[in-house]
Length: 187
Image (cartoon, rainbow, N blue to C red):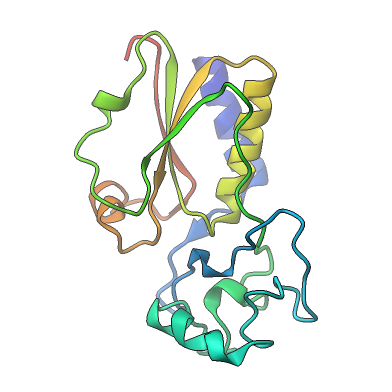
């Protein structure tokens, strides 16, 4: 437990830049994610299939979601000027046989974590969003460690955006993603 916690803290402190809510910008959404891992970038550096600069008729869907950068007239989730570290690849799948499940899929309320704790195992509750690059880096790290034999159960909580019910409930004082809560083997 201490080893996992120390490794997570080291990783988060040294290599990740978190995904924060920014009142000066629009919301980031998952609308700009590619649907396959072998996606091709357009001349703007985003997946051709979702690029609003290449397909202006798609702008309304982004604006309706609040995913719009008024300064650069593109979706916030495609604004590489404001977010140079954007990653448009879809999230990676966990290793085969890994105990990973998504307990919140669309930002809905989560009354308690305890019913989802796995007895006898370290349980990591991972608050994330599909658009969060730092969250995907955490997934890569955890999935690699699981493939190497780390015995951990991961319960994923998709906040979708900072205004979701689960965000308001659990992340009111959390400035950035990813955010994890870890339960030891004895709960």
